[in-house]
Image 1 (cartoon, rainbow, N blue to C red):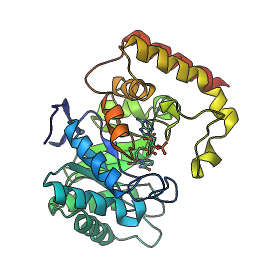
Image 2 (cartoon, rainbow, N blue to C red):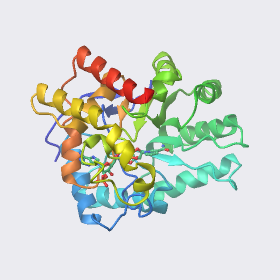
Image 3 (tube, rainbow, N blue to C red):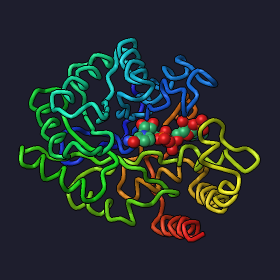
Image 4 (tube, rainbow, N blue to C red):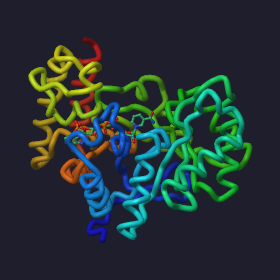
Length: 317
Ligand SMILES: NC(=O)c1ccc[n+]([C@@H]2O[C@H](COP(=O)([O-])OP(=O)(O)OC[C@H]3O[C@@H](n4cnc5c(N)ncnc54)[C@H](OP(=O)(O)O)[C@@H]3O)[C@@H](O)[C@H]2O)c1
């Protein structure tokens, strides 16, 4: 039973009404990067699913690639066993042997089967992968909408130019591009610099912010003495973890000034203040509940500006 009513906003200009924060399910079944079954298991994920709904968060982001289908299967299982439906955003990967529109529809049918639903709420192209033209995949997405297999369509990792092409191609079929999902956080501010965030606002395309906690770094729990393990240890080394400590200190200070908010909540709220929709990953109830605490309040303009400046100083290093 959902116990909280969280604010809802339209996904792009579609009729899909989403909470202002979703939960990402890449770690739900992924061993390679996230270490599935090593520190968290299906019971943790089922409890995280329930905590998501209980917090009033109604959007889960997944992909056919996550855990090679395991993420979608787990979400399907959790919905079936709880008798509760969440909005689902999933993704099509344009693998090198996929070049026909019909292959997108087959892949979508595979996702629907694993999820145990007739229709998803958002179907996204995971990466813009040449040589297949953007227009071909947009045509296929439009076919999926017309076949009633998805309510809205989006793209992911598309640049300004690629998104403009996608938007135009869909518009020719009378369909609005609902979202562009890209990496965006206090430690990855390219969407502000390259004009993507601005264009999303102009076109009423929701910018879905992935890795909004910089894969856990913005929670403040990783330090040079306590680096992340696995694949993340290769990407985030102690010198970098040392460099970001001033930003983490500021997240803590602002959190205190906001009545005891955690660094994660402040980092996620900063994204919401920018007009993006963050989808933090979560492996257990505690992480879901912490991240859900980013909802229902707002940073002041001065706090947003202070975080901008602190992140900018890091960029300059
Ligand atoms: N479209 C794309 O190409 C793409 C790419 C990447 C991600 N995504 C989507 O975006 C979602 C989120 O991105 P992400 O998972 O890469 O990174 P993220 O949300 O920045 O970080 C998630 C990780 O941080 C840790 N964490 C999360 N909340 C926490 C909390 N409150 N307290 C302590 N630790 C916490 C957990 O890992 P540990 O406990 O192990 O630290 C969790 O798995 C993904 O699940 C996926 O749906 C999409």
